[in-house]
Length: 296
Image 1 (cartoon, rainbow, N blue to C red):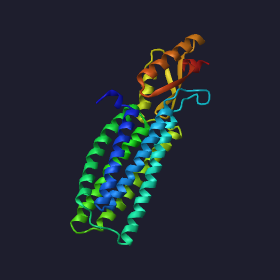
Image 2: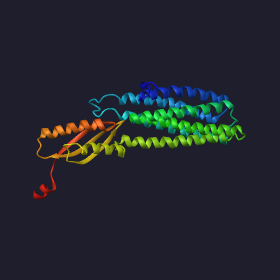
Image 3: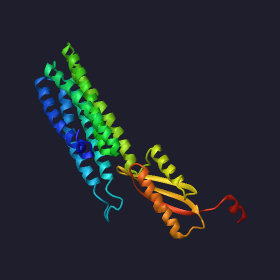
Image 4: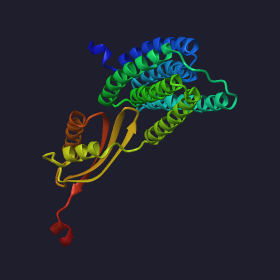
């Protein structure tokens, strides 16, 4: 696969194209195949197209360099687009669930045709491949928007599985199970949407990264040849990147210039070895041994 596709923009572009194709197939299949579950899935694909557009815009804004109004960059635009995707999923889940209940109450269900079965099966295969590819790129780039897009693909796999189950069972003589499957599709979409919102609120509130990232920053600072002790580390998220705030202790006899040089070199080391670190603020303090503290 071309390298330019294995990027945030690349995965979003491919996802957009595939969702347009799947929306058309599901819409036609749902109408001709008389499947409310597949029509519900078609609506999900329509909102996927809107979500892809939101992710694309979020990525473009997030990649803008820092300016006077946003000195720490525009990284949270990526997170905001992920939240927007999640909100669309909430709307989708609620609508599908309500529509399925309406169909069941008013006995508006029919036995789906074979075309609905074929399209639901095709969607499962395509979306699972798309999920595996997108989640890998999202984790490599630490992009909340791309990861949200990936989970949207995985949700589509589950929804299409539910639709396929309802269609097949309905064709076996139980047509009411088609809208019932549509209802559970709506519940599943809503559950995944709420989980996405929870995860991205953590980022919007400048939450700390995972323990592995924190440990790597501490290890890099603590093993620096001129650092006597690391007293405190605080790390906050800015979209796909992190900003670290460290307090280090160095030889108290060093000059201000020497302390500054140590901080500069440590910053360079952190940016080199810690993944997705955008910047580090180093606070230099004099180090005193226990014996010197006692004598004072």
